[in-house]
Length: 440
Image (cartoon, rainbow, N blue to C red; front, side):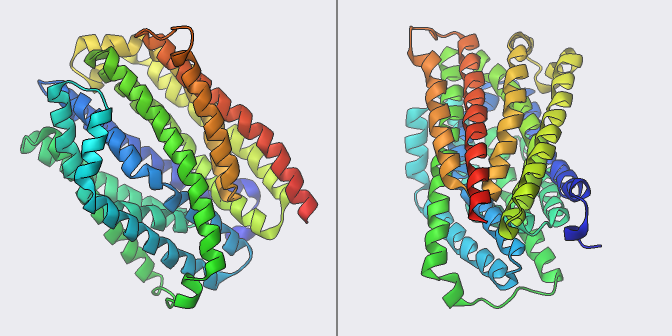
Protein backbone atom coordinates (compact mmCIF):
# COMPACT_ATOMS: atom_id res chain seq x y z
CA UNK A 1 0.00 0.00 0.00
CA UNK A 2 1.41 3.42 -0.97
CA UNK A 3 1.66 6.13 1.65
CA UNK A 4 -1.09 8.11 -0.08
CA UNK A 5 -3.54 5.25 0.54
CA UNK A 6 -2.85 4.98 4.27
CA UNK A 7 -5.18 6.47 6.92
CA UNK A 8 -4.01 9.85 8.17
CA UNK A 9 -2.93 8.53 11.58
CA UNK A 10 -0.68 5.83 10.13
CA UNK A 11 0.67 8.14 7.45
CA UNK A 12 1.47 10.80 10.07
CA UNK A 13 3.15 8.22 12.30
CA UNK A 14 5.29 6.89 9.43
CA UNK A 15 6.65 10.39 8.98
CA UNK A 16 6.71 11.53 12.60
CA UNK A 17 8.50 8.57 14.21
CA UNK A 18 11.64 8.67 12.01
CA UNK A 19 11.63 12.46 12.24
CA UNK A 20 11.44 12.31 16.03
CA UNK A 21 14.32 9.86 16.26
CA UNK A 22 16.30 11.98 13.81
CA UNK A 23 15.54 15.27 15.55
CA UNK A 24 16.25 14.04 19.07
CA UNK A 25 19.78 13.09 18.05
CA UNK A 26 20.50 16.75 17.18
CA UNK A 27 20.09 18.28 20.69
CA UNK A 28 21.63 15.16 22.19
CA UNK A 29 24.82 16.08 20.32
CA UNK A 30 24.49 19.56 21.82
CA UNK A 31 24.09 17.99 25.25
CA UNK A 32 27.23 15.92 24.65
CA UNK A 33 29.09 19.09 23.67
CA UNK A 34 27.80 20.78 26.82
CA UNK A 35 28.67 17.84 29.07
CA UNK A 36 32.22 17.48 27.70
CA UNK A 37 32.92 21.21 27.88
CA UNK A 38 31.11 21.54 31.21
CA UNK A 39 33.49 19.05 32.81
CA UNK A 40 36.63 20.88 31.71
CA UNK A 41 38.36 22.77 34.54
CA UNK A 42 37.56 26.18 33.00
CA UNK A 43 33.83 26.94 32.54
CA UNK A 44 34.81 29.63 29.98
CA UNK A 45 34.94 26.98 27.25
CA UNK A 46 31.26 26.12 27.75
CA UNK A 47 30.25 29.78 27.93
CA UNK A 48 32.38 30.61 24.86
CA UNK A 49 30.78 27.91 22.75
CA UNK A 50 27.37 29.24 23.81
CA UNK A 51 28.32 32.68 22.43
CA UNK A 52 29.88 31.22 19.28
CA UNK A 53 26.77 29.15 18.68
CA UNK A 54 24.69 32.34 18.65
CA UNK A 55 26.67 33.54 15.63
CA UNK A 56 26.04 30.26 13.85
CA UNK A 57 22.36 30.57 14.66
CA UNK A 58 22.55 33.64 12.45
CA UNK A 59 25.13 32.44 9.93
CA UNK A 60 23.35 29.13 9.30
CA UNK A 61 19.78 29.21 10.59
CA UNK A 62 19.14 32.58 9.00
CA UNK A 63 19.19 30.45 5.87
CA UNK A 64 16.90 27.82 7.35
CA UNK A 65 14.56 28.65 4.47
CA UNK A 66 16.76 26.31 2.43
CA UNK A 67 15.15 23.44 4.32
CA UNK A 68 11.75 24.89 5.19
CA UNK A 69 11.02 26.40 1.80
CA UNK A 70 12.24 23.29 0.00
CA UNK A 71 9.94 21.03 2.01
CA UNK A 72 6.81 23.06 1.29
CA UNK A 73 7.30 23.53 -2.45
CA UNK A 74 8.45 19.92 -2.91
CA UNK A 75 5.43 18.55 -1.04
CA UNK A 76 3.05 20.66 -3.10
CA UNK A 77 4.69 19.43 -6.33
CA UNK A 78 4.23 15.86 -5.06
CA UNK A 79 0.59 16.63 -4.30
CA UNK A 80 0.13 17.86 -7.91
CA UNK A 81 1.95 14.73 -9.23
CA UNK A 82 4.51 17.02 -10.91
CA UNK A 83 7.48 14.68 -10.52
CA UNK A 84 9.70 16.50 -13.02
CA UNK A 85 9.42 19.71 -10.99
CA UNK A 86 10.33 17.81 -7.81
CA UNK A 87 13.88 17.27 -9.14
CA UNK A 88 14.24 20.78 -10.52
CA UNK A 89 13.33 22.14 -7.08
CA UNK A 90 16.29 20.20 -5.66
CA UNK A 91 18.72 21.64 -8.21
CA UNK A 92 17.35 25.16 -7.82
CA UNK A 93 17.68 25.09 -4.03
CA UNK A 94 21.16 23.52 -4.05
CA UNK A 95 22.49 26.28 -6.30
CA UNK A 96 21.16 28.89 -3.87
CA UNK A 97 22.70 27.00 -0.92
CA UNK A 98 26.17 26.78 -2.47
CA UNK A 99 26.15 30.45 -3.46
CA UNK A 100 25.30 31.46 0.13
CA UNK A 101 27.97 29.12 1.54
CA UNK A 102 30.61 30.70 -0.68
CA UNK A 103 29.66 34.16 0.62
CA UNK A 104 29.89 32.94 4.23
CA UNK A 105 33.39 31.54 3.72
CA UNK A 106 34.61 34.67 1.96
CA UNK A 107 33.26 36.94 4.71
CA UNK A 108 34.02 34.75 7.74
CA UNK A 109 36.39 37.22 9.42
CA UNK A 110 33.92 40.06 9.02
CA UNK A 111 31.13 37.87 10.46
CA UNK A 112 33.30 36.97 13.46
CA UNK A 113 34.28 40.61 14.03
CA UNK A 114 30.70 41.85 13.91
CA UNK A 115 29.36 38.94 15.96
CA UNK A 116 31.77 39.20 18.85
CA UNK A 117 31.56 43.00 18.79
CA UNK A 118 27.86 42.75 19.58
CA UNK A 119 27.91 39.83 22.01
CA UNK A 120 28.98 40.44 25.60
CA UNK A 121 31.53 38.06 27.09
CA UNK A 122 34.65 38.17 29.23
CA UNK A 123 38.04 37.89 27.52
CA UNK A 124 38.51 34.16 28.01
CA UNK A 125 34.90 33.46 27.01
CA UNK A 126 35.23 35.43 23.77
CA UNK A 127 38.54 33.72 22.95
CA UNK A 128 36.90 30.31 23.31
CA UNK A 129 33.98 31.47 21.19
CA UNK A 130 36.34 32.58 18.40
CA UNK A 131 38.13 29.23 18.46
CA UNK A 132 34.79 27.48 18.06
CA UNK A 133 33.67 29.80 15.26
CA UNK A 134 36.77 29.41 13.07
CA UNK A 135 36.72 25.66 13.59
CA UNK A 136 33.10 25.27 12.52
CA UNK A 137 32.69 27.81 9.69
CA UNK A 138 34.41 25.57 7.11
CA UNK A 139 31.44 23.24 7.25
CA UNK A 140 29.21 25.87 5.60
CA UNK A 141 28.91 24.27 2.11
CA UNK A 142 27.94 20.91 3.58
CA UNK A 143 25.64 22.37 6.24
CA UNK A 144 23.57 24.45 3.83
CA UNK A 145 23.44 21.66 1.23
CA UNK A 146 22.19 19.31 3.94
CA UNK A 147 19.37 21.75 4.72
CA UNK A 148 18.20 21.47 1.11
CA UNK A 149 18.56 17.70 0.92
CA UNK A 150 16.70 17.10 4.20
CA UNK A 151 13.91 19.46 3.17
CA UNK A 152 13.61 17.79 -0.21
CA UNK A 153 13.43 14.31 1.30
CA UNK A 154 10.82 15.39 3.85
CA UNK A 155 8.72 16.97 1.11
CA UNK A 156 8.72 13.59 -0.64
CA UNK A 157 7.71 11.77 2.59
CA UNK A 158 11.15 10.11 2.70
CA UNK A 159 11.60 10.37 6.45
CA UNK A 160 13.59 7.12 6.64
CA UNK A 161 16.37 8.51 4.45
CA UNK A 162 16.35 11.77 6.41
CA UNK A 163 16.75 9.72 9.59
CA UNK A 164 19.75 7.81 8.23
CA UNK A 165 21.49 11.00 7.14
CA UNK A 166 20.94 12.77 10.45
CA UNK A 167 21.93 9.81 12.63
CA UNK A 168 25.14 9.24 10.66
CA UNK A 169 26.11 12.89 11.00
CA UNK A 170 25.28 13.14 14.68
CA UNK A 171 26.98 9.91 15.70
CA UNK A 172 30.05 11.11 13.85
CA UNK A 173 29.81 14.42 15.70
CA UNK A 174 29.77 12.69 19.08
CA UNK A 175 32.79 10.56 18.18
CA UNK A 176 34.69 13.53 16.79
CA UNK A 177 33.78 15.59 19.88
CA UNK A 178 35.37 12.96 22.07
CA UNK A 179 38.46 12.81 19.85
CA UNK A 180 39.05 16.54 19.55
CA UNK A 181 37.84 17.75 22.98
CA UNK A 182 38.73 14.96 25.38
CA UNK A 183 41.62 13.17 23.67
CA UNK A 184 43.38 15.95 21.76
CA UNK A 185 42.52 18.70 24.25
CA UNK A 186 41.28 21.12 21.59
CA UNK A 187 38.39 22.35 23.83
CA UNK A 188 36.15 24.87 22.05
CA UNK A 189 38.04 24.67 18.74
CA UNK A 190 37.61 20.89 18.80
CA UNK A 191 33.84 21.22 19.20
CA UNK A 192 33.74 23.44 16.10
CA UNK A 193 35.92 21.18 13.94
CA UNK A 194 33.93 18.10 14.99
CA UNK A 195 30.66 19.73 13.92
CA UNK A 196 32.08 20.83 10.55
CA UNK A 197 33.48 17.41 9.67
CA UNK A 198 30.27 15.65 10.68
CA UNK A 199 28.34 17.82 8.20
CA UNK A 200 30.48 16.56 5.32
CA UNK A 201 29.80 12.98 6.39
CA UNK A 202 26.08 13.79 6.36
CA UNK A 203 26.37 15.20 2.84
CA UNK A 204 28.23 12.13 1.57
CA UNK A 205 25.55 9.88 3.07
CA UNK A 206 22.76 11.90 1.44
CA UNK A 207 24.38 11.75 -1.99
CA UNK A 208 24.89 7.99 -1.64
CA UNK A 209 21.22 7.43 -0.75
CA UNK A 210 20.00 9.52 -3.69
CA UNK A 211 22.30 7.67 -6.10
CA UNK A 212 20.98 4.38 -4.73
CA UNK A 213 17.50 5.39 -5.89
CA UNK A 214 18.72 5.11 -9.47
CA UNK A 215 20.38 8.48 -9.90
CA UNK A 216 19.05 11.99 -10.28
CA UNK A 217 16.79 13.21 -13.05
CA UNK A 218 18.42 15.38 -15.76
CA UNK A 219 19.27 18.97 -14.90
CA UNK A 220 17.08 21.19 -17.07
CA UNK A 221 18.41 24.72 -17.00
CA UNK A 222 15.25 26.22 -18.49
CA UNK A 223 13.15 24.71 -15.70
CA UNK A 224 15.66 25.43 -12.92
CA UNK A 225 16.02 29.08 -13.91
CA UNK A 226 12.35 29.63 -14.76
CA UNK A 227 11.64 33.25 -13.76
CA UNK A 228 8.21 32.58 -12.30
CA UNK A 229 9.45 29.64 -10.19
CA UNK A 230 12.49 31.58 -9.03
CA UNK A 231 10.30 34.55 -8.13
CA UNK A 232 8.03 32.36 -5.99
CA UNK A 233 11.05 30.74 -4.36
CA UNK A 234 12.75 34.02 -3.49
CA UNK A 235 9.56 35.60 -2.14
CA UNK A 236 8.96 32.59 0.10
CA UNK A 237 12.60 32.50 1.16
CA UNK A 238 12.59 36.24 1.89
CA UNK A 239 9.66 35.90 4.28
CA UNK A 240 11.10 32.82 5.98
CA UNK A 241 14.45 34.60 6.26
CA UNK A 242 12.84 37.54 8.08
CA UNK A 243 10.99 35.12 10.34
CA UNK A 244 14.15 33.14 11.12
CA UNK A 245 16.35 36.18 11.72
CA UNK A 246 13.80 37.56 14.18
CA UNK A 247 13.61 34.19 15.94
CA UNK A 248 17.39 33.94 16.19
CA UNK A 249 17.60 37.59 17.31
CA UNK A 250 15.24 36.83 20.16
CA UNK A 251 17.34 33.85 21.24
CA UNK A 252 20.55 35.87 20.79
CA UNK A 253 19.25 38.72 22.94
CA UNK A 254 18.24 36.18 25.58
CA UNK A 255 21.76 34.71 25.54
CA UNK A 256 23.42 38.12 25.53
CA UNK A 257 21.32 39.36 28.47
CA UNK A 258 22.28 36.15 30.29
CA UNK A 259 25.96 36.96 29.69
CA UNK A 260 25.44 40.51 30.99
CA UNK A 261 24.06 39.13 34.27
CA UNK A 262 27.12 36.91 34.69
CA UNK A 263 28.98 33.85 33.46
CA UNK A 264 27.20 31.59 35.96
CA UNK A 265 23.73 32.66 34.74
CA UNK A 266 24.89 32.31 31.13
CA UNK A 267 26.06 28.74 31.78
CA UNK A 268 22.86 27.85 33.71
CA UNK A 269 20.57 29.32 31.06
CA UNK A 270 22.58 27.51 28.38
CA UNK A 271 21.87 24.20 30.11
CA UNK A 272 18.16 25.01 30.42
CA UNK A 273 18.05 26.10 26.80
CA UNK A 274 19.61 22.80 25.78
CA UNK A 275 16.70 20.98 27.40
CA UNK A 276 14.23 23.38 25.84
CA UNK A 277 15.81 22.61 22.48
CA UNK A 278 15.56 18.89 23.25
CA UNK A 279 11.82 19.39 23.65
CA UNK A 280 11.59 21.48 20.49
CA UNK A 281 13.42 18.90 18.40
CA UNK A 282 11.19 16.14 19.74
CA UNK A 283 8.09 18.18 18.87
CA UNK A 284 9.59 19.13 15.51
CA UNK A 285 9.37 15.45 14.56
CA UNK A 286 5.61 15.97 14.47
CA UNK A 287 6.02 19.42 12.94
CA UNK A 288 8.09 18.04 10.05
CA UNK A 289 5.44 15.41 9.36
CA UNK A 290 2.91 18.26 9.37
CA UNK A 291 5.00 20.18 6.83
CA UNK A 292 5.07 17.25 4.41
CA UNK A 293 1.38 16.37 4.65
CA UNK A 294 0.16 20.00 4.73
CA UNK A 295 2.01 20.66 1.47
CA UNK A 296 0.61 17.54 -0.17
CA UNK A 297 -2.95 18.28 0.98
CA UNK A 298 -2.67 21.84 -0.29
CA UNK A 299 -1.36 20.58 -3.64
CA UNK A 300 -4.46 18.40 -3.87
CA UNK A 301 -6.83 21.11 -2.62
CA UNK A 302 -7.93 18.98 0.38
CA UNK A 303 -8.91 21.55 3.04
CA UNK A 304 -10.76 18.98 5.16
CA UNK A 305 -7.56 16.93 5.26
CA UNK A 306 -5.65 20.01 6.44
CA UNK A 307 -8.06 20.48 9.35
CA UNK A 308 -7.77 16.83 10.42
CA UNK A 309 -4.00 17.01 10.10
CA UNK A 310 -3.72 20.10 12.30
CA UNK A 311 -5.84 18.58 15.09
CA UNK A 312 -3.75 15.40 15.09
CA UNK A 313 -0.48 17.32 14.98
CA UNK A 314 -1.43 19.61 17.88
CA UNK A 315 -2.37 16.69 20.12
CA UNK A 316 0.87 14.91 19.24
CA UNK A 317 3.06 17.97 19.77
CA UNK A 318 1.74 18.71 23.27
CA UNK A 319 1.95 15.03 24.20
CA UNK A 320 5.62 14.98 23.22
CA UNK A 321 6.38 18.03 25.38
CA UNK A 322 5.32 16.27 28.57
CA UNK A 323 8.16 13.67 28.80
CA UNK A 324 10.75 16.45 28.56
CA UNK A 325 9.20 18.24 31.53
CA UNK A 326 8.88 14.96 33.42
CA UNK A 327 12.60 14.32 32.91
CA UNK A 328 13.58 17.79 34.10
CA UNK A 329 11.51 17.68 37.27
CA UNK A 330 11.68 13.95 37.98
CA UNK A 331 15.46 13.51 38.25
CA UNK A 332 16.92 17.04 38.59
CA UNK A 333 19.98 16.12 40.68
CA UNK A 334 21.12 13.49 38.22
CA UNK A 335 20.23 15.60 35.19
CA UNK A 336 22.02 18.79 36.14
CA UNK A 337 24.89 16.90 37.71
CA UNK A 338 25.39 15.13 34.40
CA UNK A 339 25.53 18.43 32.51
CA UNK A 340 28.12 20.15 34.71
CA UNK A 341 30.44 19.41 37.60
CA UNK A 342 30.09 23.01 38.83
CA UNK A 343 27.59 22.80 41.70
CA UNK A 344 26.78 26.51 41.64
CA UNK A 345 25.81 26.36 37.95
CA UNK A 346 23.64 23.26 38.54
CA UNK A 347 21.90 25.02 41.44
CA UNK A 348 21.16 28.05 39.29
CA UNK A 349 19.75 25.85 36.53
CA UNK A 350 17.40 24.18 39.02
CA UNK A 351 16.42 27.56 40.48
CA UNK A 352 15.04 28.74 37.11
CA UNK A 353 13.86 25.41 35.72
CA UNK A 354 10.17 26.00 36.50
CA UNK A 355 10.09 28.50 33.62
CA UNK A 356 10.44 25.51 31.32
CA UNK A 357 6.76 24.62 31.92
CA UNK A 358 5.22 27.55 30.00
CA UNK A 359 8.12 27.84 27.55
CA UNK A 360 8.05 24.17 26.51
CA UNK A 361 4.23 23.79 26.38
CA UNK A 362 3.60 27.02 24.49
CA UNK A 363 6.57 26.23 22.29
CA UNK A 364 4.98 22.89 21.36
CA UNK A 365 1.92 24.64 19.92
CA UNK A 366 4.07 27.23 18.13
CA UNK A 367 6.33 24.62 16.52
CA UNK A 368 3.37 22.66 15.17
CA UNK A 369 1.92 25.84 13.70
CA UNK A 370 5.32 26.55 12.12
CA UNK A 371 5.23 23.19 10.36
CA UNK A 372 1.66 23.72 9.20
CA UNK A 373 2.33 27.11 7.62
CA UNK A 374 5.67 25.99 6.14
CA UNK A 375 3.86 23.17 4.36
CA UNK A 376 1.30 25.67 3.05
CA UNK A 377 4.20 27.94 1.96
CA UNK A 378 2.50 30.81 3.81
CA UNK A 379 5.67 32.83 4.23
CA UNK A 380 3.87 36.08 5.05
CA UNK A 381 2.10 34.46 8.01
CA UNK A 382 5.39 33.15 9.36
CA UNK A 383 7.03 36.54 8.92
CA UNK A 384 4.27 38.66 10.45
CA UNK A 385 3.64 36.48 13.50
CA UNK A 386 7.34 36.49 14.33
CA UNK A 387 7.63 40.27 14.08
CA UNK A 388 4.70 40.73 16.47
CA UNK A 389 5.94 38.07 18.90
CA UNK A 390 9.48 39.46 18.97
CA UNK A 391 8.07 42.87 19.90
CA UNK A 392 6.19 41.24 22.77
CA UNK A 393 9.45 39.63 23.94
CA UNK A 394 11.15 43.00 24.33
CA UNK A 395 8.36 44.67 26.31
CA UNK A 396 9.25 43.27 29.77
CA UNK A 397 12.93 44.04 29.13
CA UNK A 398 12.45 47.58 27.86
CA UNK A 399 9.60 49.00 29.94
CA UNK A 400 9.19 50.06 33.57
CA UNK A 401 12.75 49.10 34.42
CA UNK A 402 11.59 45.54 35.07
CA UNK A 403 14.71 43.72 34.01
CA UNK A 404 17.58 45.26 36.01
CA UNK A 405 19.58 42.06 35.78
CA UNK A 406 16.66 39.86 36.87
CA UNK A 407 16.84 36.42 35.27
CA UNK A 408 13.18 35.69 36.13
CA UNK A 409 12.10 38.65 33.99
CA UNK A 410 14.31 37.36 31.20
CA UNK A 411 12.50 34.01 31.28
CA UNK A 412 9.14 35.81 31.55
CA UNK A 413 9.95 37.57 28.28
CA UNK A 414 10.65 34.21 26.64
CA UNK A 415 7.32 32.79 27.85
CA UNK A 416 5.47 35.86 26.51
CA UNK A 417 7.27 35.42 23.19
CA UNK A 418 6.03 31.82 22.86
CA UNK A 419 2.49 32.83 23.84
CA UNK A 420 2.49 35.55 21.20
CA UNK A 421 3.50 33.07 18.53
CA UNK A 422 0.63 30.75 19.48
CA UNK A 423 -2.00 33.50 19.44
CA UNK A 424 -0.95 35.13 16.17
CA UNK A 425 -0.77 31.84 14.28
CA UNK A 426 -4.11 30.64 15.66
CA UNK A 427 -5.73 33.76 14.23
CA UNK A 428 -3.93 33.26 10.91
CA UNK A 429 -4.97 29.60 10.73
CA UNK A 430 -8.66 30.46 10.76
CA UNK A 431 -8.26 33.03 7.98
CA UNK A 432 -6.00 30.93 5.72
CA UNK A 433 -8.20 27.82 5.80
CA UNK A 434 -11.29 29.85 4.93
CA UNK A 435 -9.41 31.39 2.00
CA UNK A 436 -8.34 27.95 0.75
CA UNK A 437 -11.94 26.71 0.94
CA UNK A 438 -13.16 29.70 -1.06
CA UNK A 439 -10.44 29.18 -3.68
CA UNK A 440 -11.55 25.58 -4.43
